[in-house]
Length: 340
Image (cartoon, rainbow, N blue to C red; front, side, top):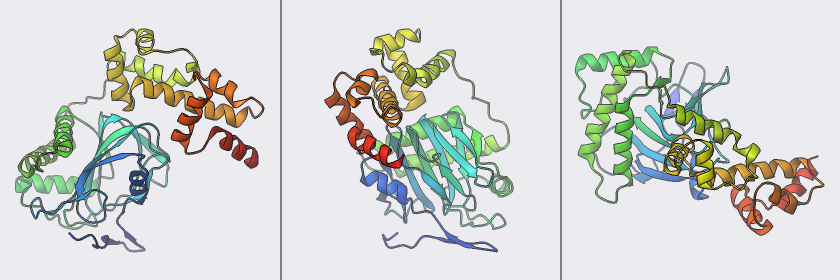
């Protein structure tokens, strides 16, 4: 597909709309706020997939968002069936603009949206996460259209009809994931990150595995893997409370000890839950705490606030604050006073 290809136009009975071009994501990539790896056809970001093979595959990519972002994907639609999966961290997701209800995507869930379903990622901004996106165009724009299956997807005619019928009827977009889904995306991630040749054969097999597993999920035959280990819940609670206790002189060993875990296991759960290292989580908590104090304690010296949030020097604090929020602590305080 050429770089000048126009976005697909969707038509309903009362309005027209075009498929998303991911402008907030493109801007975040340009500003080095997020790492984006993948292949695409059309208007999506990424390397152009020139091969004629895997026809209908519009996007296969992932983003790796380190730390809380200052952007999110607003409500949008895509030109194919989109499968979204969070491998690390979490992402707020909604396909219910009218009710405003959000669901939290974690590795225990998979999101599947059709071209006619508006959806958003981020409420309104994106949390730290590593999230995959797979978009396949089945030639449908409305629920009552006939699906045109790419020849490389090897479901039987009966399974294809069952898959398409379920997708055309359900409004549900978030499903419980399975070990098979997790394994497929992990293998896709390795292929996308590899410097070797783009392996079309392996990708074809992996995507077929995923589509078949989704059909099993739709049938209600997959195991519910939503339970979490007690140790993971302990770390999750620790992370939630960290802003309150960020001034403490934490080390990796002390944080792990507080959770009753070995440092390596504690770091593993931090990556799984928040897609961040313990040090990154601690710095993020300290910066968010300092930002809130600067906003509310207008007469307290910024140096005192930095010390009270656990930073060893005001210079280091100022550097990290500007890196995180793209404004110096002093200028942020000036802006807050002007807004008041």
